[in-house]
Amino acid sequence: MTPLAGFLLVAALLFSIGLAGALTRRNAILVLIGIELMLNAANLNLIAFWRYGPHPEALTGMMFAIFSIAVAAAEAAVGLGLVISIYRHAHTTDLDMMNRMKG
Amino acid sequence: MTVVFYILAAMTVAGGMAAMLLKNTVHCALAVTVAFAGLAFLFLDLDAQFAGFAQILVYVGAVAILVVFAILLTRGSETPKDGVASKHWLAGLVIAAGVFAVMGWAILQSAAVLPHEMPVPAVTVLDIGNALVTRYVLPLEIVALLLTAAMLGAVIVALHEKEAAQ
Image (cartoon, rainbow over all chains, first blue to last red; front, side):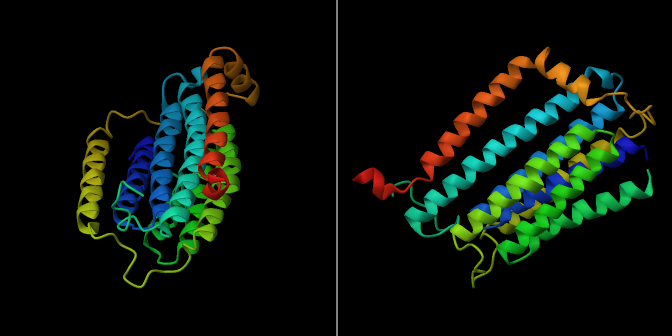
């Protein structure tokens, strides 16, 4: 197995773990953590392809990963702000309990 | 495939698994911090020093703290009595397993044509800085705007509703 295939397999496994967590957990914060894990797995793919690609000096994959990290940080801040706001309103972070569009 | 890669991969995957399987939410936040740190070390193993240290700063430093704050503010550390899994957990698990099976199959099928050992790319932080202010200056400005908007949005969303009503 080539090194790139190893990194891609780890990224695929991490993405699946994040997806499983986001789909099976009930706590909204843990669903956000699962989404963060999926974003990180994608970043690992980008960096691995940058490292083993034909033109690493073009920095394409590296830049994509850095911007992805910045966007993921913004997403985490807004997502957790939303969870806190919903908790204040409905007094729960249980996603199975959040079944009303109307407050 | 070096021993370092196997150790870091095991650490990252174990952290991710623990974050999604543990019952106590605070323990999950700590486990996901281990996974983030493992990913940062994997970036360093891939000779992407800048991305690795950015990962440590942003994820291990900021996002992990943010998650712990959110858990404590919402009393999410109390483990619910009727389990932590959603009522559709079996479907979610099947979907995730299917996704992993498809991706793993695709990777193993194409493993023969994937590139082998490449020379270490000679990229310094100076090159990254030059690229950020020349070729990637527009994305950089957009990210700056996005971060400002996200910060304001997060503050406004999490503001007390009572004060707005007065």
